[in-house]
Image (cartoon, rainbow, N blue to C red; front, side):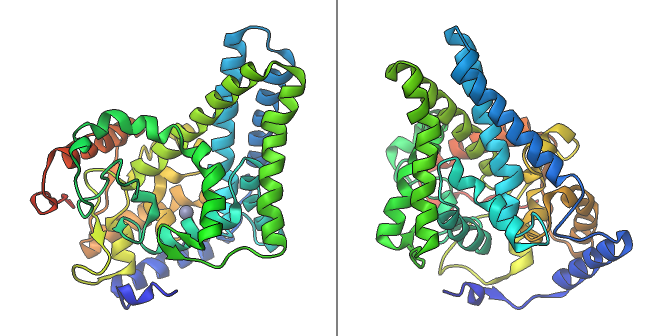
Length: 362
Ligand SMILES: [Zn+2]
């Protein structure tokens, strides 16, 4: 399934950008796919996860100790998704294919299929961000309207209030959606090859392993009701963190949205920038934790570049955007991007006709 036909051939903006980024790596003598610090970061994240899990399982005595440990576990799992699995899936974790596959497979260990994710995220989302009908990340219809090209329903008037509840169910939904998508052979209406052989073993084995460590083992040591409550709390935490991080980078007031089969064709690089936003670029802790997903524009332009490089690429990308008149959106903080996301949902829920609302691109 080729999506390249949606775009015009690359133009001078893409050529200048690629040349300047190539020059950066040549000048600094670094590999785009690898950077010192990734192994240490991976070890830190897994130690965080293991410490949270063992504390909740073996050492916590009061309900609030268990609750804090489960929330910590949820943050650690999301951090592994951002800082390890995401790079591995894009083959940006290391130069070697084995390390990338191992890093990508971390997702199977925390409940979602790395095979389905690769198609959903790397192919469908990255090829067509913010395109109604092609990007499944902006499709939670009929519950919410995230883009002007989606029909408005009466209940969308309140979507900015209840969307957080839906986001909190994301991880639980992934647990089952993988089986549905594989059974249907489609993701968000787009066909993908069903997993076979080792891919299928990894998908099913990952679910069994995840349910084993997250539910099975705890149930051998603690009452079932307590374990279920703790599991839901960890799941809600990872869900909210992941959903909000992704939405702040695309579904905000200053990004643009398109609809499959409508409008004029654009160029790939210009489309990636127009549909994506950075946030909190100056916040080092946020950048570390989110795997530089707050430098989402740079990630979308250079998905095969290790995330530790992205902050250094941002000034190059920003200057090139300014030179070629391509709007570059960077919210000053995570809070401002999150508020913008909520305002965008409120305005989309209140406006009756898609045509009445045109997102600003400046
Ligand atoms: Zn990505």
